Image (cartoon, rainbow over all chains, first blue to last red; front, side, top):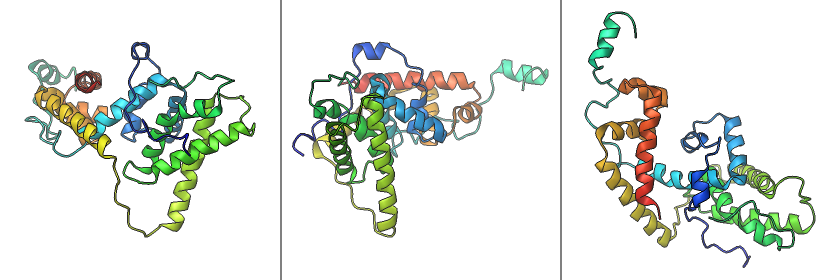
Length: 104
Length: 169
């Protein structure tokens, strides 16, 4: 198996300039895929897609590492004040609209 | 980045198949778990199998080589999972065996990400926290913070861009 070199197997793939400028319609699947939130059929579709789309794979590879770091304990777990699921006080104009029954 | 779709008919099959090593590795690690020490063996088996199939003429070029490799990879992952569930149903999970060099690079990048996150305004950090750490949907984050889902996407994308800039190699 000498031909199957180990080098570069886990390296994050760099985005080429051309790839970085292009936008692919499958890009919006990246987050959902990394967070395991895609429907099974969308997941399969995206997996097949990134095998043939260097642009999406480069983005996926780069974002995967970042998401992994963000999900580690200690990086994000001390959110700013008022973030414990409790909604922040609505701005005055929203409260006014709500009171008038025009919104929410 | 390695071009994954340029296929030279005269090049040995190893060349075109090896260009997909990173993609196959990613897919296998995602399915098996990054800490599973078997992932590298599985990737090598897939690559060997693909080269053999191309040499034997089983791959006729009806689909792209990327699709062909995707199918082989998916089948091998399913086989692996079936095999493991059968054989190692109650076996303890083996300890991870990370490459020290990759580990060091990863730690370095993690530090950079942490620095950027620490410097973010609370409104961006809150969104990242709820979306990535608490794994809420965009709509749930929007409700929790009383902003629109569109605003959630904007904040996530903005924060990610800043982070990506800092870790770009």
